[in-house]
Image 1 (cartoon, each protein chain N blue to C red):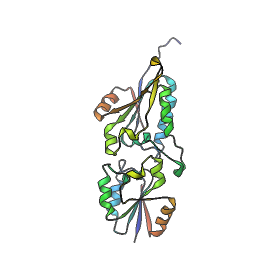
Image 2: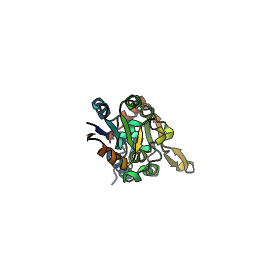
Image 3: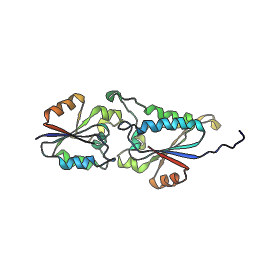
Amino acid sequence: MSMLHTVNKSPFENSSISSCLAMCTNDSSVLFIEDGVISVMKSTKFSDLIMDSLSKYKIYALKPDLEARGLSLDNVIDGVEIVGYDEFVDLTTEHDSVQSWL
Amino acid sequence: MGEEAIIKKFMYVNRKSPYGTIYALESLEVVLISAAFDQDVSLTFTDDGVYQLMKNQKTEGIGMKNFSSTYSALGDYEIKKIYIDKESLEERGLSISDLQELVWEDEDEDYAEKSSINLVSRDELSEIMNQQDIVMSF
């Protein structure tokens, strides 16, 4: 079963990111939304965790949430796919289920 | 009334990113209202609170009000002490140049613009926080 995981909290705020990644399997995807988009930025103390995960799962970040926070798209970790709301909808339909980590 | 005004030291501590929760906007509202009471006010941005001052915020895509330009009014409200936690910036791969500049005008020096921003270490912040009469956390 393919599962789309969404993470909407800053990695500095709670442990959603590590709990989520621990539950991911090979056919999982992770989409970072709202404050979750902080997770995909370069040079934070969570960057290594994301870079390690990129070889195992597809990782996405929602563009409007990056832009709202003044987070430069150029500073997003290479390999993370930046998506809009349309692709968010596509991702939810392409996967068998969605889990929202709150 | 003949009573001497009591001035207390107020510090507002901002620890959250701007749009994921309502805390940042509420804090800013409270700060601007409290400015009317002639108290000794300072603001701290620490942890994810440093994201509140990021330049280039564009909120059209999420349909929320972009309140980042309001911070530049703080100087007009005589709020001149803004403390930014250096370690919080470093943990997030940010530098002070990623944040907007905040200034106040010194009327004793022909309204010269002076920076309100103080980049401080956690040790320095601890010391400043301990001198406050009232600390409000958002």
